[in-house]
Length: 394
Image (tube, rainbow, N blue to C red):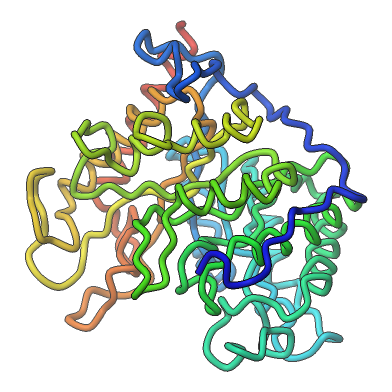
């Protein structure tokens, strides 16, 4: 949990200053409360961008499957793909082994289709993992941050010449499932302090994202630290100076992302609730930092009854019809928040067939495991194209 390791303010020695200059600006300014002053009028100074979050699924696809995924991404109208660049995938067995060809295919396919990549540099081979958890999971943090940073530098040196300049450092470090020793802001800040300068030294054009924060409450029994608390702790440690944007995962299902509540939804936590993310950024001198929603969506398979309306309770998944409604609303809700720069739908394709034992996490796709499209595919496509057409007219 927070404070488990010694809190050390991140040193900026050797780090270049983040550019804070993504392609289309960072949107409208915020008032003193952190709520965007122009929000009520729907003002937005730049065009929202769209992406698909694919995890590591693209890496293991056949050539035909990968080509189909790229064609579908183009049809949807997304410009970005978020993909895992797992250290364990590239160097699974030893520090002298490199299997870059596994990720080369993804980079080359995306480039051929004019799609930008957001690789999430993450996950640790057993030989480089913290001894406390090296036998349990690839989400075990590295035993040596400098070695992780060295891998990141090699990845940037390989892929920056192919047009990859945007990188995310780890995924959901605020929950134990993705940081197996238990979330620890100080330790994650140390990883950032080692990795960000290494990436920037290899590519002065690099644009860096904080590891995507899971939208959760603080639950000690699960070793979850809330996104608000974790971001605040990183701000206190000075770690936000290492990145150009923050990354956040606001799943709201069965509620629509645009739903307004008395207590606040995960979407409202961006810039409307008490101690919202934008307010926290402002408190630490980063009020203009963009927010990238690098995962959001809804699963269509799990145990129990599926929610068929946003009012449903005690459900773990939604019907395909409601997933489509959520997909449409995701575009509308994201476009209404000036701090949000890019929104990624998770995910492209289910990674398992629907069986009684299949896990919910495998069924967030816009398509089923066999490739059939869910209603959400067409819904998201229509919403993206409608937004883009309206922006062209404005």
